[in-house]
Image 1 (cartoon, rainbow, N blue to C red):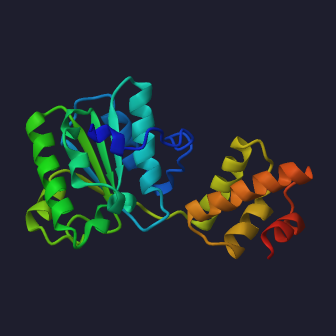
Image 2: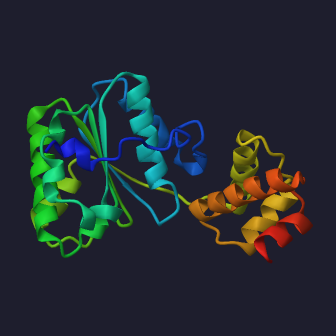
Length: 232
């Protein structure tokens, strides 16, 4: 069975560089975008940051950009690694890009750690593939028992995602609402930030819920309407 069958067949096409609010992370975004159209090295980019700060969004963005450029990209989300086998990584060094998301979740998984270690070595030897790895912690702090793997994670460029300020979150909510065809006043966005979970994935889920409810009720986004829909 081809290892490709283990990989997602479609990533969210709205998770791209255009919809990513860079804030203080413009250097990382610029690196990934220029990296996709050049042969610049090193072959490995490591991205760390707290949950909900956009690591997966950036990996999706790189995959979507690769597709736009007629390049191949494999995304391996390790939140579901229990449903996969380490053999899913076999042959991925032949892709143009490999994105391994949430490598910190491999703590205590020696077979997976060895498989990622072997993949990094094959990617380096093959010389054409570029690899992006994400985790909550930096490459030296990630809780992986395989010391050689932790060493490999430091071979490339390392970036730490800086969190968005509340003003930035407000801008993101207003902009993402607009992309959905909704008008969200800034005071409504600030209300959501102050009364809901503050990480962006949670706020995007709230935005989707409001989108459906506002369409069904043919109602504008106001604070009273938001309170009613979200039972706040």
